Each structure stands twice: as C-alpha cells, then as structure tokens.
Image (cartoon, rainbow, N blue to C red; front, side, top):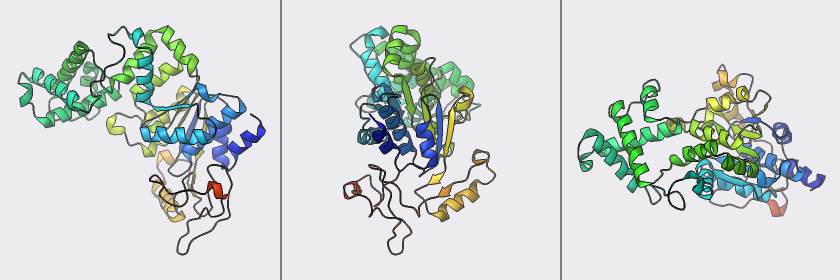
Amino acid sequence: MGDAAADRVLAGLDQEQAAAVLAPPGPVRVTAGAGTGKTRTLTHRIAYQHVTGAVPAHVVLAVTHSTRAAGELRDRLGRLGAGTVQARTFHAAALRQLRYFWRATGLPGDGPVMLDADGKGAYYRYLRGALGATLRTPARDVDAAMVTDLATELTWAAARDLTADEYLAQATPAGRRPGMALATVAAAMRRYETAKRAAGVLDFADLLTSCARLLEEDEQVATAVREQYRSFVVDEYQDTDPAQQRLLDAWLGTRDDVTVVGDARQAVYAFKGADTALLQGFTARFPHAVTVHLVRDYRSTSQVVDAANRLMTGRPEAAGRRWSGCWARAPPCRSCGARTRTTRTRGSSRPSAAGWPQACRPRRSRSCTGSTPRP
C-alpha cells in the first residue's frame, strides 16, 4: 500500500511502541503498564504489518477476555484500515469455529446447544441436580450457597483444564476451600459432566476445551483453521488461563507468529484460574522472542508515577524498569498521529488536545473519561 500508509501508522508512536510495531513477524512479548498505550501498540502493529504486506489483516486472529475489549480492538483496527481482522474473545472465537465445524465433532444436531444460553437458570438446575445426586438428597433441598460454591470450583477447574480427579489432586495445594468436602465437589463434577453429555449440551467453559480437542484430534479441521489464521495476537495476556492457552496452542500448531501484550501486575482473573506465569515464561517457550517494555505512562501525573516507582523498588517483577511520566506532554492524535504543543487549563497540569486537527478532536462519549483520549 506504499510507504505513506506505513508512515501514517507509525506517526506519533514513542520509541518503545515503535520498536514493538516494527518487530518482524514471529513471537513478540510486550509488557505494558497502565497508561502506556498497549492497545495502541497492539493495533498499530497489526495495521503496520497489513499495510506493508508482511501479514494481511484477514489472516490475523486477535483475542482478548471481554466483549468490550474486543469491540475496542475492532473499532481501532477499522480506523487504521485493518478492519478485516477477526477480533473476538477466546470463547466467541471457539464458539464460531465449533459452529462451522460442528459435523466433524460427531455430536448430534446442527451446532452446539448451550446450557446457559438464556441465563444461568438451566446451569444452576444442573448443578443442583448433580449435588443432590451426590449427597443423596432431593435437589430442591440443596443449599443455594453450596450450588454457588460448586459453580466457583467448576469455573476454576475448567480454566485450569482439570478433570474431576485432577481437581481433587490439585485443589488442596492450590488453597481451594469450598464450603463442602473436596471429594463432594469432585463427585458432583463427574455427575454434572455425565448429565451434560446425556442431554447433548455444552456450558460456557466447554467451548474452549471442545474446540481445542477438535483441533488436536481432527487434522483436517486443524489444517483448515491454520490456513485461515496465520498470525495471532493476545491482549491482556496476563489474564490467560491454561484452557485458553491450550486453545491458542492448538491454533498455532508448530508456528510461532504470536504477539502477546500484558502486565503481570494487572492480573484480575487469578481467582478464575488465570496464570501470570504464561506471560512471564513466554520467552522460555519462545527463546527467540522479541521483548519490548512500554514504560512511558501517558495517564498519570508525575506524582503518581514517582509514588509507583518508590512502591515497586526492590520487587523482582520491576527489576531494571522504572515508569516515566509523560502527562505533561500532549499525546498524539489516535487518528492522524499529529502532536500538539502542551497546553494546560487553569489549575490543571493535564495537556489539552486543542491543537489537534479539527477533524481529529475527540468527542465525548460514554466511554470517554476526559477531553484527551488515552493512547
């Protein structure tokens, strides 16, 4: 598409962001603290590879952990001219592939029947029945708190990709303390899985394992998916769990064109089974991976950045890195990359976007938290 398009994508990136964007196709790990422009870096890397012809947008699968984040990726990529990228959550991508290749699963029907498609009512009825059968008591007499505890343990075990027997072996070392005996949880898990199979339904957690298993066991399906998607991007990689990693590995096969972005200090899904060791150990799996640290904070004042640096002093995850505050400098326009001279309103050190081109000035929306959008 020409050098001009590539230059537009690179415009306004800082030194570290540009290093991540310019890294060649292959394994790349970007560690990015809050406010350092990780989503900007990720989307500009995809767009730069697209406009230079290195990796066409339609062969990229970008995955994240929430529908809102996926929507933000699609919106930004569309504005950068890479709107054909598939940006989805792990579960949405798995469901789409299961529907497309459903006949290959050998299961009845025209597609997956989701147990909790219309809310959690059916899901909790199945759990209540599994507990009742385990405890040999009528399901209606099962305490609601026990059902909630079982649901929590099922979520954790599914994220860790554990069978009932594996859960029983690993729950105590992992510090799991549900409001019932671990053996009761494991037995209820078995009955729950049996009931689902008998009814021919899947729950939300089944999407990941079912899709991964299909790719692992059916070479034709795996070949078709890997021909469609040749490059992968994972946002908020610190919140990835082993079940999601298994699916990512199945997508990749023997290839290594994967870019991950995250920060181990911002993990929020550990209670669900997410494992920050996947981010920290990325270079052990891919020794030739490029690693880039984004350390320029465009969101916080210098006082906040200084306090954070003092707080993190001596912690192993902060070794060799300090955040630098950039709030006093106006951020680049996300659309055209133009920078402005720093201007301040009375009583505030925050720069304004008054000098941006008129067409690029930000508009307030429900997702806007101020006059200057985040990078």
